[in-house]
Image (tube, rainbow, N blue to C red):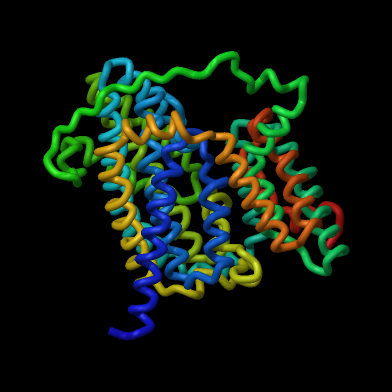
Amino acid sequence: MDALFLNELFWGLGAALAGGIIFSGIGLISGTDETATIAPLTLLVILLGFPPVAVFAWFIAAAVSKHMTHAIPTALMGVPGDTMAVPMLQDASILRRLGVPHIALRKMISGGIIAAFVALPISVGFATLLAPFAEAVKSWAPIIFTIAAVIIAYTSGGKWASVFVLIPFAFLIQGLNKMAIAALGKGVFISIFLGIAIGPMFADLVTLLSPISRHLLTRSQPREFWLAPELKSWKGYFPNPLAILSGEQKMYTAAAATVSALTFTFSPVGMTVMVGEIISSRVKSLYQRLTTSLAAMNGVTEATYIAETIIPLMAFGIPLSPMALGPAAPLFNAPPVFTSQPIHNLHNLMVPYQYLLYGFIGIIVASLVAYPFSMNYARKASVWVLQTVSQEAIISMFTGLIIVLSYYEAGIVGIGISITIAILGGILNRFFGIHTGVQYMTYYASSYIVLTLFGIK
């Protein structure tokens, strides 16, 4: 074998293993937002100088692992593991009340692993078909970003509030960027991106600092959880996910993963909700309906994360999906290593077979790490997290990481910009439903909006 290929292969395997282990643990902690966790650590991996294929393998392993273990707090404790787990909470809670949370968990993570293997080749194939249109898409990118920002804003929870905020938020972003240019002679990306990422967590911190708003988050007593005992129905350490799901459940999961991979511009949460509603209308038995919808919905969380990363990255090199604007954004923009204007990122640093090879490496490694761990030790891991891991400590850790990365880019100015964006963006997210996807799309459209409306370059 070629020495360069072997070197890249070892890097890819090592990065995938690291991503799988780290995010298998992070997924256990309820409320850990994907953008605020996957994106900063991916950015750190890029800035540390990992080869492109290793960065990609890391990201795929991280995303797949997190969206397997996020099922543990969702199914066993009745709290969402992250944003993508929220649509599954109701069905999981019903099964928990019926006394079979372990069944819900097994169906969810088995659906996820099957969907990941289905979505990867479909995503690579679809991206190959779209690639000939790349130049036309790139030339229209500013207008596409602006139109997409309006659409995503209106379809978000904030509706007209999100649409209304587009112009002032774009004006704020460009104003802060101009301030950075005046102070440092260059614009900033990392500081603005990370400010949006940490917004919801930072909003909670600011809420707790104010005596007027503190009551919104304070609790009079610790929250209680009742965990069902573990029941094992397989031999050995690694169960067969195909044996966990029925034939009908495998069919629905594969179909949902296929559709999710092709509709790469849609909201991942929206696709998850839609799949759950379709299955609920077609499957009559309560138990079968709940377990089938959970398997397929968790499959959608895996499929959308893979497809919405690979298709815009491989076909266009610019972030044209909700996923590409959030957790996967560093794969497109991580100055000075990766940029999308001009395009210099994984789009032109990897070839199609590498997306397929290192994508499968990421999925396989994540499956070997997260799947058997979740199936065998879900209850023990949940108890350990509840008793020993402070969510406040996790928030503080990622806040500290973001401050370090902002300082790396632009010193004190970068930190100031991150905090400013985090406070405003977090408040908009928490209290007005203007989620991070809207804010990221506004960022990418902001230069065109400000230039068109105000004539400011």
